[in-house]
Image 1 (cartoon, rainbow, N blue to C red):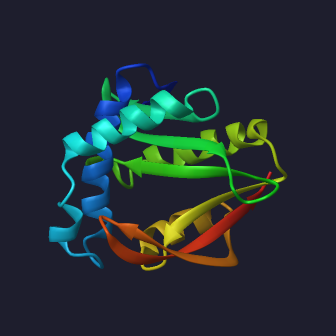
Image 2 (tube, helix red, strand yellow):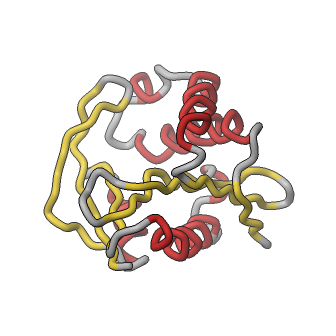
Image 3 (cartoon, rainbow, N blue to C red):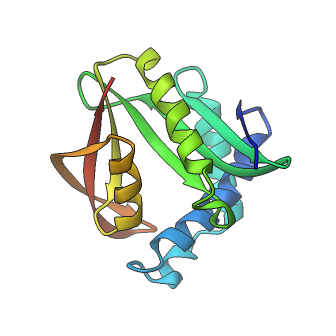
Length: 167
């Protein structure tokens, strides 16, 4: 299997929204109810990504992973509110491609891109109960740095941990 990585184009955020919604439902359904996860449609995710990309495209980077011409995953990077850091805001892989190397390819690429956004480290936030994602990040050299927060997922508060990676 060959993974093609490319920067997002103008029309891509709508497709990213569809993948994002599918990825969240698959990854979080073990600890957040499907009803909560499915409260936002793929269409609304697409609209949200299109709007966010419109406002942040000069300061953020969206990279898409394609397999056989189909969207298989994406990352979203940008400056962070954490002093001295750049942030990996999102890495999502289509459920059909989890475990195939798509996520690893996206992570390796993100770690090469993050230094150009400034800071001496990268940060990301992961849902505390998302043990599969936590193992993935830890295998990639990320470590919890002690910071925590609670943020909503479709209006339901969910605890998160911050991970850091030296740049």
